[in-house]
Image (cartoon, rainbow, N blue to C red; front, top):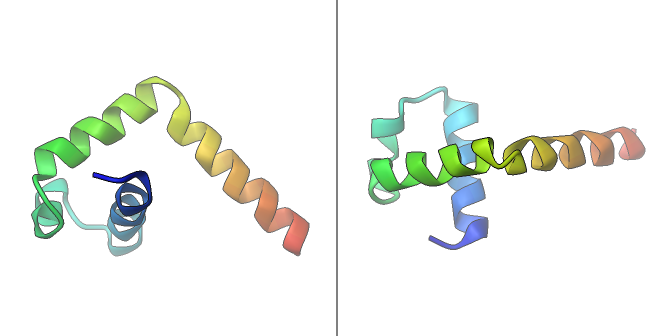
Length: 60
């Protein structure tokens, strides 16, 4: 799964509040969860969120 598609799927999950299994409409939910879990363990997800918040503050 390409990174941009993956980010959109994760943002979809966050906005909809749906379960991981619901993401099977985008692909294998286990693979999506596994990829997200790796990003969390490697602190990549935290860095992405920090960048989003920083950019949002600049625009305000």
